[in-house]
Amino acid sequence: MAERATFASAPPVIQPTVPEMVLLYLRRLLVTGELSPGSKVPVDAVAKTCNVSPVPVREALKQLQNEGVVVNEPRRGYWVTTHSREEFAEVQHITSLLEREAIRLGAPNLTDEDILRMDDYRIEMERALAEGDLWTTNIAHREMHFVPYRAAGMPRLVREIERLWEHTDHYRVLYLHKDSDVQQVSLNQHLDIIEACRSRDPERVIGAMSIHREYATATITPGLLDETST
Image 1 (cartoon, rainbow, N blue to C red):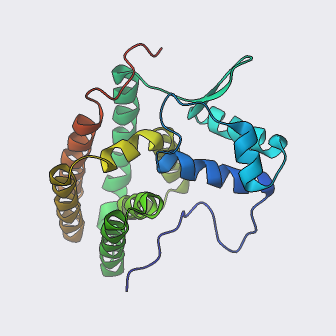
Image 2 (image 1 turned 180 degrees about the vertical axis):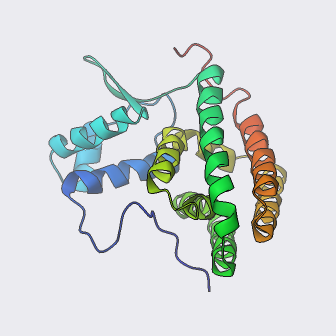
């Protein structure tokens, strides 16, 4: 049975505060594409849906602003960040550098249980994608990728990679709306990544991850990034 995918940074035993609950709701809207790049965040509507005042909504938005996910324009409110091709490529490059270091440290430490967990997440991701559950798809996809990073035993390094992923989560969902042929290529690449992890060879894992990232980036960027962003 597939292990339920969860954000490792949000232990389920801790009751979230109101701003944290609102933040999770906003992340869901971003990940599922309900708040797409360049769209305005309806503060009052979010507050009404979450049954809170606008204050914790703005607190949550400040957190997303610190992450670079939204911008606050004076007298115009909060808007979901848009990236130019250059900005998107820069984030991807920095992320790749950190991921490679985590893989070099973590791949030799992977256990058989880690490999099985990666495959569990892969299965859960594919099932959720087929059901149109983009939130679970995104979480399971992230957790599958992060198994070898976490095996490095360096939580600060992993947190930096998580932060960079969060910076572009609202673009990653665009990939999930591609046609089935594109999605199938990506799903097959996940199998290659898991098989590479089974070898515990860092360079093989890095190679498989690089092919996957380059393919995903190439399918996201054409016509979807704001060329005028600064």
